[in-house]
Length: 525
Image (cartoon, rainbow, N blue to C red; front, side):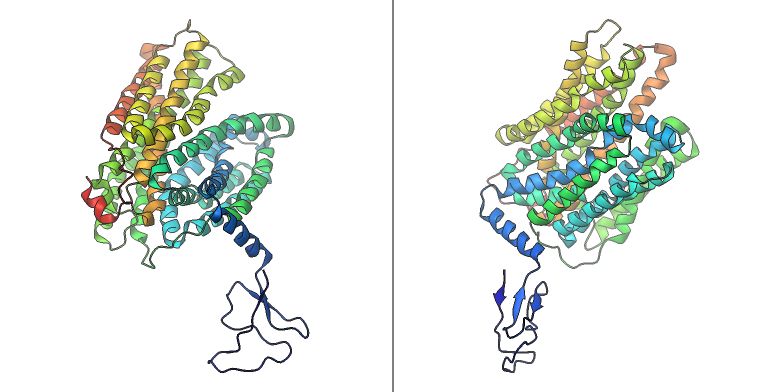
């Protein structure tokens, strides 16, 4: 909005008369632009984009629905980054044929981005705490836009893998910074509800991606996956620029470079070993080396974090049960959920001779139940406590694994659907309550890195579950035949029970207490 600039003082404090068109006052905001129409006084105006943003920001600030608008804008970015994963997975054979490669090579277009986001997530989260969540989110979304557009013109398998990897590397900050803004917008008593909607989008986006992207791929080719993703990412970027609030920047302190490198190497070596284990063999030098070096790197990381003045992730939080036990629960629950996710299509194809289409339709019930239950569980966590909802979620996951372990050649589709739905219900209950518990434990200045750490833990659990349960099934098929799937599901059952046990040690958040500080986190064990 134009504002008159009639400050008579120039630099140095001395007054000078205004004659004709003069230069704008040097104290004018750096975002203002001086316009000098002939015969007029100095005029300073904001660029139209910033003026529009201020108007939108003012309206949101006056609205009682402001936090929910921030939630919706943040979730659009999360949706953009996650809705392509399933349709890409099922389209790998077609992509391989078109690019003259193999599906095994192109699996790195799926696993590579997952590894990048898991490894770089905590670093990105710390940057959002230090530089402000909003600018980090916007820069991250710019990366998603650029590299999704680049993927449209990928000329071979390796260029597609590189563009996907770079898109994930730059986009790794979108999730943690979005979570930080959401958690700062909602009071502690409402965070579990917000995380319920977060779970809805995280689980529902891949389903919607298949529903919309599948016909596009069949009719026009795989490049349309990214043709569709690019404008959605642009919309998320524009809406984020207009809607998302500025957050307080952290102190200007030295960034914990050594801790960041050690954590990235430790997590990366573990994920690489888990990823290559089934193909290269669990006793191969690469896999054994990864497992051996991981604890050494993580031990070095912990020592570093306890010594530096401004650590990447303060270790004091791990002395708080509402931080450490939710991390354990998220790891174990994702192990079970994603382990079952990878086993089920193989079971339905090998044992029941389901077609690809029938398997896909049958499997949709799992993420659909996850997305429906997530918001409900968020509200129930406030009413009944995170412990109750987390324990119930672990038990639902265990029941799902036991149900799938009982599947045989004569099992009806209704039994399979109920078992899969129980898995979605369980994960939908665990995720919002445990993520909210972590957010309610840490200082507001550490919300970004804490959110990223919880996502990294979930990702490690997911990779471990998929690879270990597949290995159990493959290792027992020679002696147990079709029952090898039951053995793998029973391992998943035991892990799910572990999730229920760890969730039991989470205390219900006292929403009447002030938000935690580092000192209260130390004491609240």
